[in-house]
Amino acid sequence: MSRKYFNTVLLLSTTLLTGLALSYPLTSHADTSTQTSSAVATTASASSTTTSNGNTYGVDDDNIVWITYPSTHVLTTYTGTGTYYNADGSDTNKTVSGTSGALGEVRINLNQRTAYIWDSMLDATSNTSDRKYRKITSVSSFTPFSSVYTIKPLTINFVDTDGQSIDHSMTFDFPDNSDKLENALLDATPTVDGYTFSSAAVTTGSDDNPAVTYTFTKNTSDSGSGNESSGSESSSSATSSTDSDNLSDSSSADSTSDSTTSTATKVSVSKISVYATRKIGLYKTVNFTKNNRIRWYQKQPRTKRPTFTVIGYVRTKAGTLRYKVKTTSGQTGYITANTDYVGYTYYQTTPKKVTVINAKGINAYRKVNLTSKARHYRKGTVLKVKAVKQHGITTRLILTNGTYITANKTMVLKK
Image 1 (tube, one colour):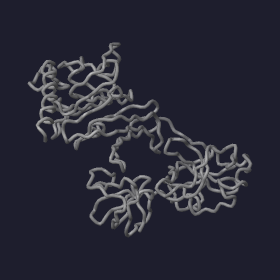
Image 2 (tube, one colour; image 1 turned 90 degrees about the horizontal axis):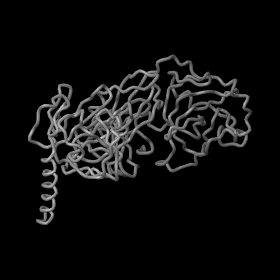
Image 3 (tube, helix red, strand yellow; image 1 turned 120 degrees about the vertical axis):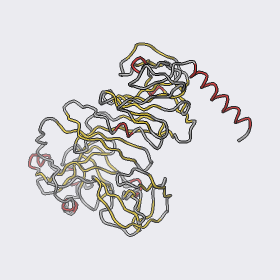
Image 4 (cartoon, helix red, strand yellow; image 1 turned 90 degrees about the vertical axis):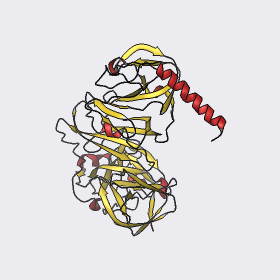
């Protein structure tokens, strides 16, 4: 390290610590009378947890998740003028101009679907209830001073027991470390009108970014639409059906009479994930007509094939099976179930070897829900597989070293 660079870092750290020293110290959520010598040190409340890296996290009122950060580990920089908010997320009707400071706390109000932060330069106070916050969206950047922190996007989803979105999801960047904010989110019980909280789960995508999904049960019974179902019969029966009118891609399919809708019959098949291997259409109803077509999906290379979650099944009057699906963007509609046009997104049987084909590579994990990262494999790596394991509507491949990888065919290819 050059002497010039060392002096620059030392000067910046000294400036931050000086600013912090002029402020009241940050204390616990439970003990507001105790002050410490550290500018943003914390004293954990009875319901909070302190991690090995100095973070403290917990949940207030079942739906407000918070995590504190050690002094000067992360610098915040603001954009423009923003509004001050109270700890409960209420507007103070006061504004503050852009500034920078050492991050003290991230606070997620799940019922508001909003995240806030407090730092050393915003409103230094030893009383959490009097502290002022700014929305995390006003932060132009987080700059970690400690190597244990990286900046990652976190997504929070709200779904029903069928995996359907029932409220707006939220995504924001936050400073992450090995202890993770998700630990606190798993202890929360947010609310959605008309639903009862059921469970919380953490998943990690191929990009190693976390997502927390809250699942809810609908309060009132739902008899369904009459033309769809999601029973438990094996999905193999769905994909083996024939399709005499070529489903979505022939001109004859576009001329199918709408009268078949009222006589369509329900089919009981388990929910699966499928992708398009050829050009297919997405339709508003089970009748594949030009007027009902929402859009075309053109044939794509394997790594870019469009994927769909099957959320219902129905046969037309002629006996042709359709999938009711949800796209990755959240749109619903009907697609062909013809195996000449669609197939499983995930391997269902165990390949002896797979080659990584995802451009960014893939990660291997110690847990089946793809958490506890073990290592990264680059594109072109050949991996030996000993088993396949079902996980929700997906499957995982278990490598010979005991770690788990995705079985998504757009990311790995049977060798």
